[in-house]
Image 1 (cartoon, one colour):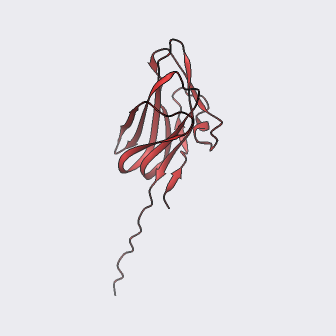
Image 2: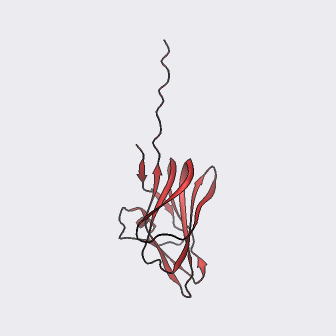
Image 3: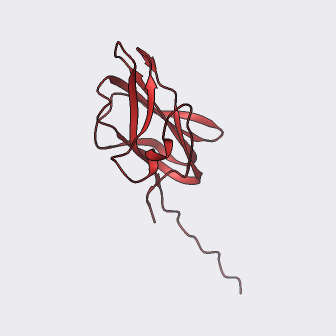
Length: 141
């Protein structure tokens, strides 16, 4: 059955409370202090390989000072950025991979355009697992 599934692990890269990004609660957050006019480190969210065509992220409403996001996925032995630009706040935003791939991780980082250090935060993130068609083997008589 196709549908959204939560990550099962993470590489925090100095993010605090990274499991909050996949605890099924949009009221808790993974956070990262980000210096003025710089990119945050990536928060990497992992899962055993799954057939995935898109991811979704609930960007926290406190991101008003962050002007850009970069979202990437890991497949075929390398990271592939699937989106870079502005983002919606306080609701899920879907990011298409462009095709169905065997994906094991996603990553996200934010650009802080403020003149002071600000806290980036992510409420939730999910992978979209595609249904895998079952093709029965021919019966040999």
